[in-house]
Length: 480
Image 1 (tube, rainbow, N blue to C red):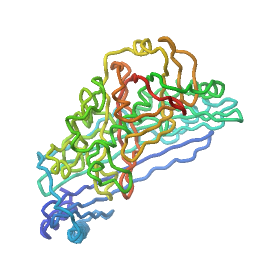
Image 2: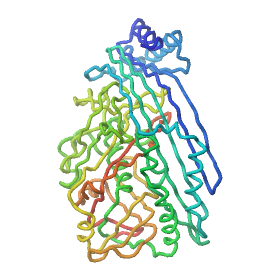
Image 3: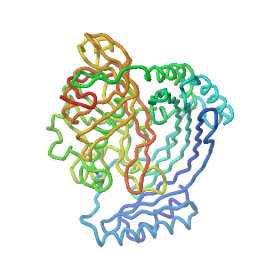
Image 4: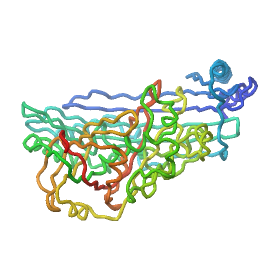
């Protein structure tokens, strides 16, 4: 055991902690961005530090440091205990943790190509090639980006847990902005807001086929300038996997976070309409809606071997056959409701205390082909790739926009339309789902920038979905 961990735990126990854990994290990150053939960012940074979390007198305390010596372990633990004692004077109730199985484990993450073994100049040369493919008259901005990280985390607790975990992440994306002098249109691949991310090596960048899609998104952006606007009214929607990721994130992931439900996010990001009395008896969606929180997928960005409380990764249902059946929880919040901890506590660095975060929130595939979903629509749209989003503080009323859409008439795809938007009330929307595409269309999208907490923590999550069909949805800016 690292000396800093051992001395921190011993000190915390000696000073009266009834619970204590330590996270020691070593991390390397590389970021590259290129705009219009100009390298905007080309950085590599490294960090190492640890955080100590304790319960003393029924209250939490936390402190951290970048100095990983044994003496510093004692000092940080002492300050964490002092913070807990001060917090105990204003506590509403004692912090209590649900019992869990205690693990000692070491988990490495094998990859085919170590992303840090590829020279930065080779990566930049590839991005310059992508930039050239996206160049055309009318395209005013061409963006490409790459991100790589490698982390080694050690978690230990007074309960006897000692877990070492490796985490390697790769991600990339491209985007163009087109204008005709009157408006602008945006197209991204494989997704907006940074692209796609996974727990893989550089092989993931090769699998994404960025070069093969660069000219397509360029031409689609230009074509969108000439297409007619999205129609308005109530109609059927077929939503692609990339937009479904945002739909899952905002209307399922956040409202099932139990800390939001219990009011712990109320002052910053709101609460949730999925209050405890609804668990196991609320009709969240139609019978076709089966949504899981799955941290066990070996490649999903929202997956991991253990969370930051030492809870082993699990796959649980949040919604099963339309019924709301599960929360994202912690050991403390699961104790309050008499639930089993499902492993959703994570911090974005060693100097932040863990909070409840999404894992991989996935709509399970159905058995329809895309052609079958389309053929069942007389009047509707096929839309994908998020462009804008808005949702209220209880995660009930939402309005989303996408980069691209196609009109559907009498079961057949028609012309492209621009600026598609749709809105609804969360549970009414999910109740209108009547078809889900099969596994051949299923994709788990990695999202690296979910923000939550005060101070803000930016977390890596993911969402899996196929195409999904919803009936009688409000589309456009005016509704019947």
